[in-house]
Length: 204
Image 1 (cartoon, rainbow, N blue to C red):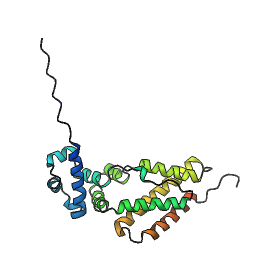
Image 2: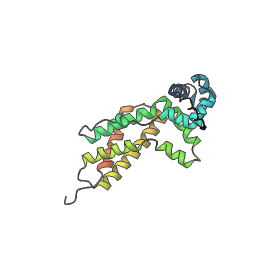
Image 3: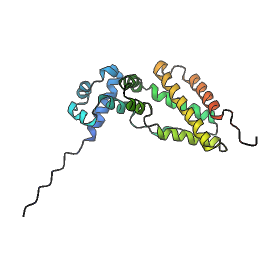
Image 4: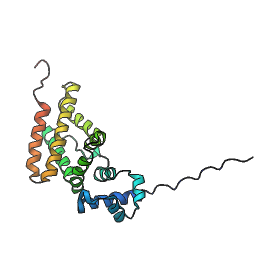
């Protein structure tokens, strides 16, 4: 009696190659910009062959996206201070610094251009890994407005989140961290006004 031979397991993926490729991509984005961060250049810098890179990232854009943004870490969002405006100011500073990072500033315009005719990819880039952070903002606003209906909290906090992302991204990509304090103050004031708006509990 014979048995069919079992297939030999493939060689395990080397995680260090991922680290090396992502590091090389970030370095090239800063040094030579989006256009210069080609797969060939990344392969030379990282010491990882182009075929290996393409097996991990079928598209150059996907590699640059991962190098620039990775996965959002909601833990970086500060805890509530008891003053909503101060909380919004802290959020504004964090978002501005993230977008003003040299890697992000090099990657975002090129990725938006590359994805402009690919709706799904464009939306994914714009909304990348934001869900958990958006929920944290909802929880933040709800803590200051416990009497507000849940659907109103969601609407207000989502509007504030969208405003925060848009304003900090544009600011970071155009002028970076110039006049950081004044910008964060103004943004926090606008977000606070948006959150509170004109809603009042029934009976007031």
